[in-house]
Length: 139
Image (cartoon, rainbow, N blue to C red; front, top):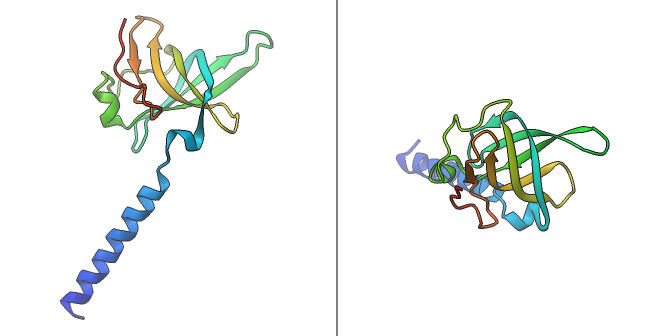
């Protein structure tokens, strides 16, 4: 086979990978509803420090029924939220946090976090929200 064939094959493979990556990404308005604001308090159950978005999960207890629901929250990319003061060890399992954000359009226990306040210290961090309000915030 010729060198040109391998070059074209490599070019097509890279192009296909790039297209799959960019088409998988979404805008805030595609998944979340800015008219469904959230302000929830709960204990951290899981943290995923991955690209393209970091996620964390909290258990939220309904005061009326006592039912506990596990909420998933999307944040910005790790590189973005690091500029707001986040590190891989900012959140620990069991930490109590207060999350401000927006709920998913489909009404599930899934949201886009705008800010996260650590209840133990009062430290408030922007979460790199794709809604455009995820800048660094501290008391």
